[in-house]
Amino acid sequence: MSGCVCKSSCIQDVCLHVSANHSFGLVEAENSLSDPVDIRSEFEQLVNVIPYPPALVRTVVPARHSRQIVKLSPTSPRPGRFPFTWICTYGDPLARHHPNARYHIPFGGK
Image 1 (tube, rainbow, N blue to C red):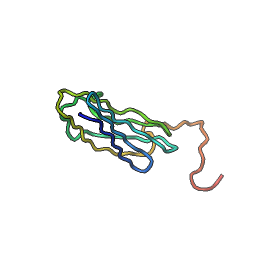
Image 2: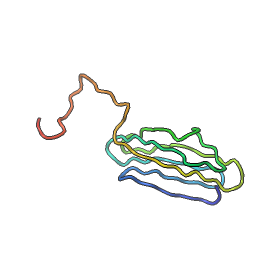
Image 3: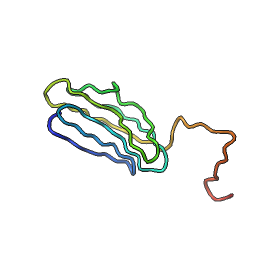
């Protein structure tokens, strides 16, 4: 990872920002929506880098928050690469129904 590379990829109001220089790389998720999002990503290939955590994992990013997804360390002075794919699903898959909660009807009504 030589020089400084900064790149963003967005799906509507959810973005993954990638920044890298000679000593480390970061992948950070930014959620500008008013609801949480579930992000799943996967490395296509790792070249001269070691990720922490060891693989891109599924993570929930709360509404209007950012979260670091992975940090990469170089394994040699040669340039590193870490292309990956990602998808975003709206909502928190771990959310649970609360029997005493009062929910709004989503389409009209009272």
